[in-house]
Image 1 (cartoon, one colour):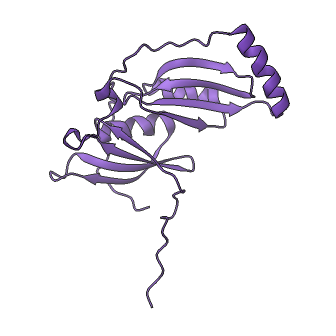
Image 2 (tube, helix red, strand yellow):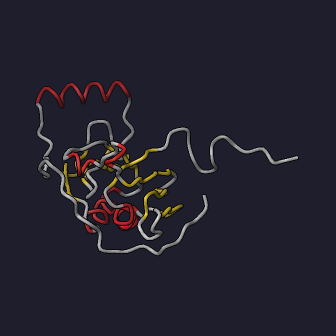
Image 3 (cartoon, one colour):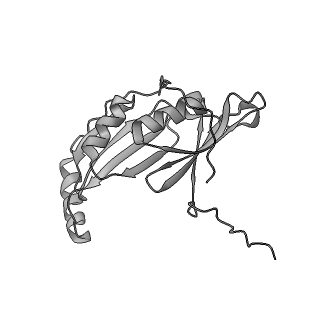
Length: 184
């Protein structure tokens, strides 16, 4: 009797983020340097040198990277000149993780700040046109206290410093990847 195949591959959750990028290999190098991404799979195109798809794992989450395909109408945020999505990372030490990502080439969109809901958080922009918020929980806050703080926050309308200007630019990581594929 054959072994039953799970409809959801091992390690995956019900929802997996898929990001369209201009250059999969450059994106891989950046996400490894900035967020400590682990390469799970890398698939090459017909010429067997350029990656057209890859999967990475950041923490306990899997993300798929796809090369843009204009002929199929699949374009990256950089090509479109806009921010296409926002991915949120909870990390143990946001200040240290933030510095690592900035050193790897991420650009500050919104500086780190202590938010009314109990997170220390900020938003970075990567060279693929994606926004990444990073946070560490610094305080457990009840829903009632969050509501009170939110009311006070929005009444005084504090400015959150946005640093990056639209549109996003491509900035390529200098590292190259080994041509290896790891099974999930």
